[in-house]
Length: 136
Image 1 (spheres, rainbow, N blue to C red):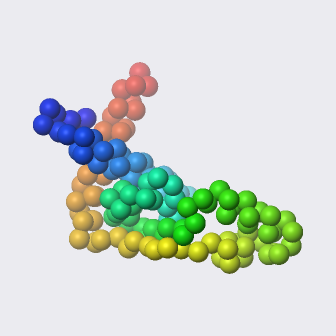
Image 2 (cartoon, rainbow, N blue to C red):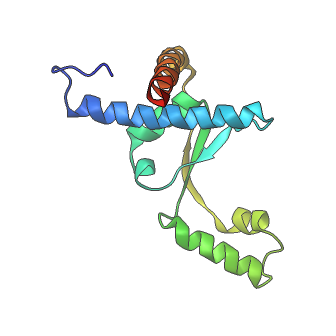
């Protein structure tokens, strides 16, 4: 929605990143409805390699984002399972706290909060209107 001939591939890429960030925010809001307020996220994979995508997600969701130092997080997860299974650590939280290192973090920029709140409100309206349209 809203794409025109004057938009280029960069506009399309940003729209995709913002869409994923908006969907993430919707999930976080669902958790909050059930009493769980999430204030920090861990970001891994291809999206975590993009400074732009990471910043969009951080600012839109209003959550601090941490980036694991190890790129292959599946291997770290397997090592954590093995460490708990072998009795090296008593539980997964303790194992994770000791085995996962971080390379950096982002803090939300309050200066863009209104900008993303306005865009998110429009996104949610469009989301629910389209959902109702396609359910008919």
